[in-house]
View 1 (cartoon, helix red, strand yellow):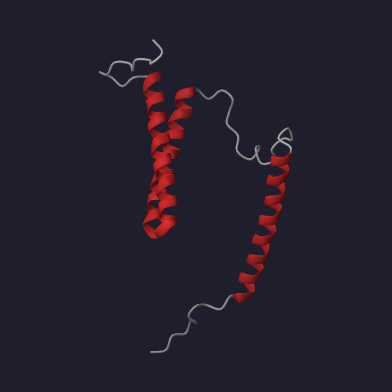
View 2: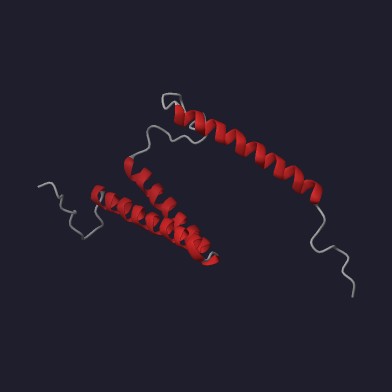
Length: 126
């Protein structure tokens, strides 16, 4: 039985156009970041893309940070399973840092509102 679709599909023209756009985007991003690093007083042009509402309370912010870190943990673990050698080690290091940050955020949440039945965590400053 003959296969009608070429293997892989021929789309070299669109690939070249995509590669060109990515190169241009990369150069533009590099210029923007380099300018920002040279002059820290210049406002970050990217900062307005993601905005947090000013009246969001701390427990809500920490809960969302915890969920974001948990997602990062899953993504880096999945990525590490597909890599080998030093790249795998880098992915696992990122995964471990995300777990550490998640633990810190969870402790901050517990300090703000201890779970039922558990005493508030004692401060180390006393």
